[in-house]
Image 1: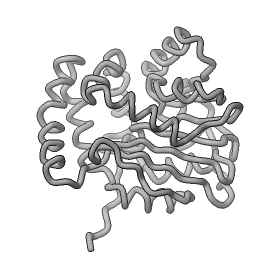
Image 2: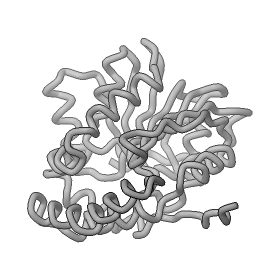
Image 3: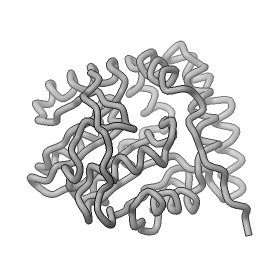
Length: 251
């Protein structure tokens, strides 16, 4: 039996993570597509199908970045609100939403103290954002607070692959290609070294499923993507949402 995984915390302070995303925002979308060979687009489409937002439902997309997943979710007719703490990411997302004439609403917010009332959303999603939270368990509990009982949560996140050949190639890619492409395209190797380290240190799927349970969710079996380099976690909120002091939007 494997020993229990130690609790994961973001590898940088929130101010450092925010500054990093503000810095790489202009090249963020391009690098996402290059670094994943365009597979990230298919992952988001799959995520929308799994979450299956209904017309008129209120959906929160946390750590929304430049709003790619927000816009995909809004295609269902759901009322989508995106939240992020990077002002430059949000500015790019708003510009993208205007170009597409989308009704998504984007706001600046602290993921650990969301500016929303308890049980105010039918569903929520987080794509590649849980790794960057100062306290992932506290962040998931805050998402649980703003979801109605029975509300759905979808988390799309990188995972350490388990198959030996894929694992070896994946480690090599993270250590060498990722920082090199970050430097070449965004002029910022450091940000992509952080990305590589955070992926390697993050929860393996079984441990993350247990974390979801601890946060007040009933998780389903994770959906493995692309040989195990990413996964979709889908869960339902159970019990009543806990009270928490929410904050006003930060941007």
